[in-house]
Length: 426
Image: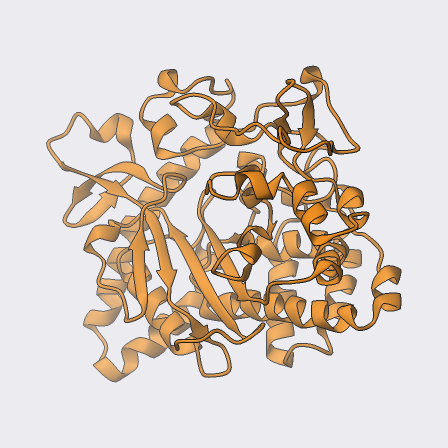
């Protein structure tokens, strides 16, 4: 597909942790790129990466970098796009990629137009209305990964979620304040208030990119609205549900663009409101029941039912932009040195916490990271990494055993059924 269609064409970014991506033979239209946030040093036994650096480094094994990001080309969702998704998921399962991850995510890029001010505000308002719903669905049926990394890569847009940055005087602010955005009087004013976008857009690694609802690409050539909220999943039907929910969001933005009175009546449901699960599910049903096919809504509700609500109960605490603590020094840009605007909310240094985050650099040598929180490597993280390595071996053995006993025409059916069973096994 050459030309994107408004709110119909999508692009996917699927992060993986336990496979050697350099040796993957992917279906057509998929490609691979590096991503330090999900990469690890690993050792290979019979082609299977074993992620246990401390114990394995003393053995004579081949060392690789495991993990990376798999990117799709444009996906036309008006056609049967489940076929390439099934093929990709089956390939990853056969290579031993585990279903769950504390690090890896799924990003959905939704084709969009270059919006005017009214549409930009509609995106923000609807995002605030559906924020806790997106976080619950974002768990994809298991603990939301932001529980262990303080949502460093997909911060909430409601207060106190946005990344904390500083201006040239050293004063501290969130990089966006929803109320300020909704009071913007021009498009240019909106983008200044949204993390000083006009001054910083030439840099890829700016704070406003790292929110669950990312508007960064709307002014660039990509013209996409990015949803960074979803955990990695290898269930094609769950990935479909995530995609269709994002498409419904885009369609709803267009609807509310022409129905401003209804838009302004939408209540904000911040993830920090800590609503009970049933209240969030009712919001999902109210929003999606008339916009999605029954089987898609059913899968969304399955995801919501199995995602632990405790995993999206975040403390009401502001956090620094995580790249302030890059191993090569502070990578957080200075904001608003060319503008008079300052956010209506400010912080003292004592209020702002250092986020936990894991990438290949601080996995390799924590003492070289500057600085790294003392609680970065929790027991649960260490245990989960060991569990993933064991799961990798068990997964590969199970696939081999199953496929050895089946004819070719039966294999796809078994692999598809297995996808629905993985969450119970893990």
